[in-house]
Image 1: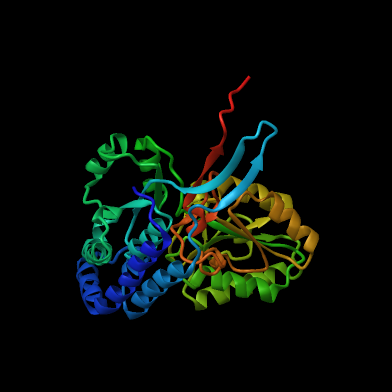
Image 2 (image 1 turned 90 degrees about the horizontal axis):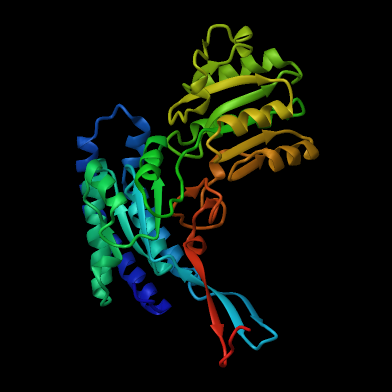
Length: 399
């Protein structure tokens, strides 16, 4: 796609702000059709699908925030002149075309598009069928904003493909694709990795762990656990597993206290064999595969560990490498945990719910990357560019 200047891109976003405000009720009405057709057995997916006044406000705010950010394209990273006189400038550049595959959330149709477009990328949107009506009206809004400013609708395009058609498209795209971001569960990620022929940046899977050290402030631990588990069960930054050090003072009493607090929030508790000695009436782990599972529900697995190293080993084996927490008053222990746990975000005495572009100061995000290349964590505006070398010479040849 053509390299656009910042003014043109921001004018499209100004148009989009006006259009979203004008079409607010039509967007909510289209979303109601999706909600009415949805089978509500998956509560997390249903929550992600909802678009109300608050959600439209958030869409508008996301567009406004990206519009006010500096253009990430054409930023000089390094500039050096060699002995032979060559001037080599490393500069940020667009990826080209990004394909994002996501389930349910219509707000992704806004956030992914505004970020990709401001970074001068074309974006192909493959939303779930459960959000079809919502996504169609949001695509229409984007197309109006683009055409109002003399640009092609091809910058932002919704793909209408069934599963088999998506598989075929990934294997043999009808146009060049530079990056695919699957934003969803383990099955979606495996599907994309199996069939894609270009770079894939993995995002979406949580299965986040929290370790309570024997040096923990118990009040902090309980507050963080409750928030991370119950604040938003559909978030990939929600908590799924808690590991408690067996040497925690008043261990049994505190376990029972945690059970009581969780049950007040209607959280289903599963325990390992050791914790079941204390919480004997709770369901016990029968299959170790549950340690790999992202619950997306009011459900929490509690296990016992002997020491910090055991906690680190378990987390690195089973977690989704998204977010992990240690609750401790010992800073050295916290740093040991944070250095050695292999997650995109590691926390000391704070909730996993902060793994979010807005909460981390990045702004709107395309996704949370759990990959290590080219970026890990929130994929904000500045992460949707690659780099390009500009080499200026005066007839130099290599000898």
